[in-house]
Image (cartoon, rainbow, N blue to C red; front, side, top):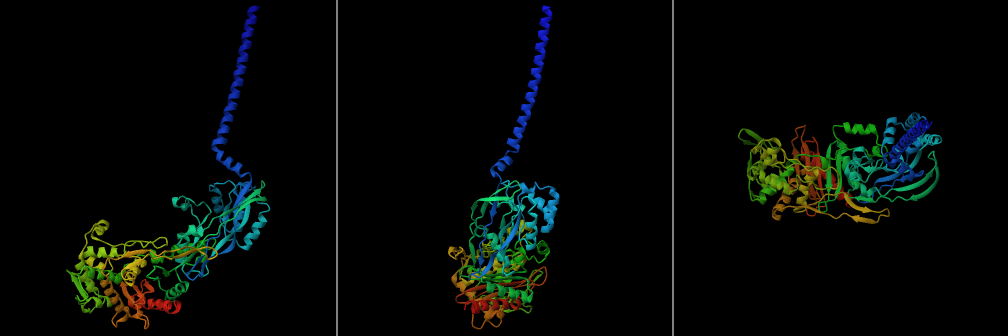
Length: 600
């Protein structure tokens, strides 16, 4: 009996142990599941719930600061703001809509955009869980009316006002002004845009891009208490936006329009540049073809954008700072001054031009097929004798041509305050070996001496060759910003002119070149005589530039009045023919209009 009691006790104790062990396992599993859940909530989803708790049903609606206006030098409005409306979605509430896919399609049909575009915007990461996402800007009255109706039963949708850019002059000065649009995905991952976020409107070209930080101002915000459906209960706080500063440009819109009309009238492609030599101020910058800025106001017109991208004439390219051309005979300014400065020639040195010059079995022709006969310095510049410069170039060698081309700023950017500027090429023996693995030949020197061959420059660099002579040896940095102003026209900052280049050339030789360039326009045999103005002395240099893609480019670079230059002009007509016949007359009209109409 005693033995049986002991066995029963042992069994009872064992059963209790098993029950306790089973309960311990259950509790352990429960705590393990709880631990996993806590890990998920705290670590994996912690950031999400932290943002949600911080939000506490408070929506922050950004108030976009109106961008500053853009004016010409006389304070004529070039870019202003007008009211418009956009539709925003707060994803946190919008995703709670019943039949989500149907809601997306309904909204897409009203806004005339693909449903995929809305989904893509909703999928982007945001720093704040109740942050609105802009779906479409520049809404029509019909779209606003239909969305207001939908707001009654669609969660998380709202319409907000925002300023929109307006361009009163349409395509005029489009390459200078540029345009704005929503920041792209590529820009968002670019470190240079680290202070921007998805949905921001930024400058994408021209002045809008160059001075985006000045024009954009500081956005404000409204803190709104909302219910579970995302509908407004009350406004908790408002932070006002700060207007962007205004930008005043150096260009004269009347001169800009006049120069553009000259190009349009003749259906020319190319560039007209006008500057103040003494300050570097750009008075006009025409690049044709161009584009209508109003297609970029609000939502960019997709069809128009694709048309611009497909256009083989590249209307989006600002040829004045991004186009690369052989400077042609305008480069003879550099070669002539280099020869004088190195005492390779003097103004009386003459070379015989028989219309053709042979290097072994290779013929190099002058533009005048019957030749110029014996030609000295002044006549060589005035009549643009090629053979004079073939012989001078060979005497100087490529090393000296390279030296003086660099001295005049070729192959170096001018640092103009416009985006996308190119530098051009000044070739040398080493450059040719490096790029084509072939030696430099005498024929390369001959072609370089008349500004062709491998030599290339932007129109801005080419006009600076004329500016160096107008200023008697120095060049100012080109710029389009004149001043930054506040909304009451009070000047916030003025642009201080900067000297870009000072050439190491004897002043006497520069004066010889000035005299020679005056003869280009004012002598009976001068190639630029069609730029002659009876009561204004114009100096300049023509160029007819060989072009492997077709007819020659026509160029003229010059300045006026001769004794105290107030304007320098470069005209470049692609496939235009002769510089003296085509470009010089246009330069005359620009100079006359500016000095006789605008300056008066």
